Length: 287
Image (cartoon, rainbow, N blue to C red):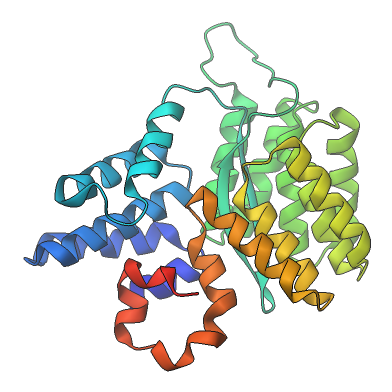
């Protein structure tokens, strides 16, 4: 239950550490299978796709039909050799805090390399380190990393998106607007730019504009589950409950954020909540 607490507050790194320790001391195959599944989800939400694949392949050795293990494993295998254009940190509010996750960006102009032998570029290296610091809530260090990434390559739009999101977390709305405007001036072809602009609109209480922005993000990337969660949330706040439920359910097609959707349906399942609810991934399917 402690691990689930870390998981729900976006500390997937700490959750994964606990799951790994429990795997070493438990003997029940059912519990070990469930722990590998939780660990795989944690790694997936950190964009550690190779480690996630190892976890889900381990789950498959117990039962390849366990929950959504098979489609997640197939998708991870397809993505295994894809290059990406920097990590991006995104999230949505749960109460007053943001629940976060990391994604590999494949949109917008390619990053600049300062040397022909660089594998990913110094700017991307600083950006990706900043994302890892942000998810650990090391906000000062994350800001320094993003600023170094921008300094190394001012035309690399992703650290501008990340520092805009960090400014939202720290309630620096004007700074968030500044950086997302800079990101958009570099490229208008990145869905994460529109996503952060949506978050800014929500902070300004402009829900209608937020809906239009998240719909634009979906046009650019129709496979991002968090976009559907966010669109469902916006319709929920407009009391359009049927539309909200439709988009929350749509997010489940992409497998990785079913715990977000579960949170939104939790009020309907209060009579079913017990210790097993927090421990068993099978109960993520409660609607």
